[in-house]
Image (tube, rainbow, N blue to C red; front, side, top):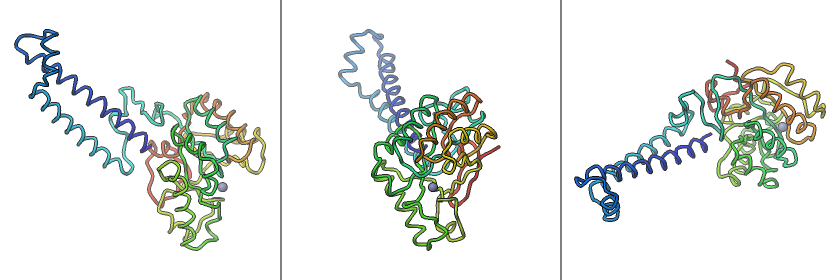
Length: 300
Ligand SMILES: [Zn+2]
């Protein structure tokens, strides 16, 4: 999210800078009392007329300051930035346009990374303009760096599923913090960015867990039980039988049957009018996220 917003800002800045330079050149033509003869304009450009260049630099400085201001204010959850919005209301996110007012669901895959299944899921997601969230286990990350990079670069979300998949309600406060921080570091060592969201192994929590995780905690409201059934048809039915706008759907990345279910569900959900979004995208259009809070879904 933040990375994509930064990319958009960077391109916007480049575009505006180019527009300023073009504008300065046109002003140079306009200010030339001899008229906009091609040779005169070209000569002026080569000589570097002082006034237009200074204006250009001033505008560039202003643009740069505006970009900086935007970057600072984008540090926490913010409403969609103007340059990402189109007149039709669609918003650029994750490399495709989303309709904030149309139905959307978040498919989430725990316990990876595991490239044989994860890449199948991403192939299908990207074919149908979908993005999803992978809650990864930190001590697996180094073994699947290429897959982690694909998630990151293609607009999927990488979430934190602790370092060793320990049940956190069995651990001390310090151990809870370590499990979360070590996973953040493992992901950041590959992508340069630590995951923003945490999912608790087994969904298990207590007061110590909640007091020691200073990030949004993402549960789910639609459980496929794919890890137990290892049956694609069962997982597909559990989703299509009751899915609704704002749902967070729990699946797992480790099983071929879960991959089979995902590649069937992705076009089926799209066909039913659901946009397939990451948890952060869902939250962005449905009220936002706060550190330390626990979320099960983002219905309206
Ligand atoms: Zn898990």
